[in-house]
Image (cartoon, rainbow, N blue to C red):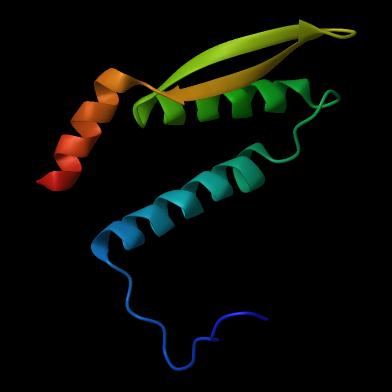
Length: 96
């Protein structure tokens, strides 16, 4: 493989990395553990997961749009783009 492999102990996580790790763990536990399997057969779990993701992305400053399509029943997909208004606030928070 190109490059050099790391050896020795990993550097300790920064405060931001710890927060990110903990947030990711909570999200995975919510989706995989609490909500569980989600698909057309378990449609209620699918919509619960979509709502959870939409709220999280909106809270993180993304502009979320619901894209629906109809197969045998109504289906939906989320499209999340950074919301320029909240992106500026998030950048300002990171600098302080």
